[in-house]
Length: 221
Ligand code: SAH
Image (cartoon, rainbow, N blue to C red; front, side, top):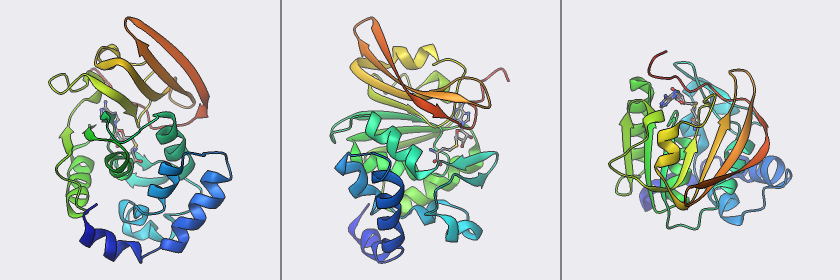
């Protein structure tokens, strides 16, 4: 965020964000201080529809239109922590949605590429992120994320905000050696959050628990 935006917004809903981090995120064991610190700053309420602002810091996902949702804060925090970000990484995100997790990734990583299938959501997120000062190290595109962003890869981290039945092969191919992918994987109504690490041609998978995400819509469907 640029300084002007940070100053105006930080005075707004600071207490709600502090409570969200303390009661929903730290209380459930997300211990990464960088994740907690940035979730205390980024104004989540600006990423939810105006009529839902009052609920922006509650312990739930919220609809953002076009069949999409802004993920529950604890789910966002769990995924960010699982990405093991130290500030330098090149990150690919699939499913920009509201742009909330995109903003957090911009704060926690080096450079971010994010793809959203729905053109309306993509435009809305682009406008808001730009207004908040996320520009130089952020690249946005409307399109099918399961194909990745070959011209910009390989990526140190890949994160999916929508759930495919299996991790799409192009994404595994665009993961750098030593890189990490975090995604909800499984059928439409219930998925496992998994972290996949790449070691050369070998991929190791860790199960991070049950989640429920908007399904990834594939090109042929
Ligand atoms: N992290 C976002 C999650 C939004 S919901 C947030 O918290 O706001 C998941 C998003 O994935 C939806 O916006 C949906 O339109 C998008 N999506 C679904 N299939 C996709 C695909 N194949 N490629 C890119 N985005 C996709």
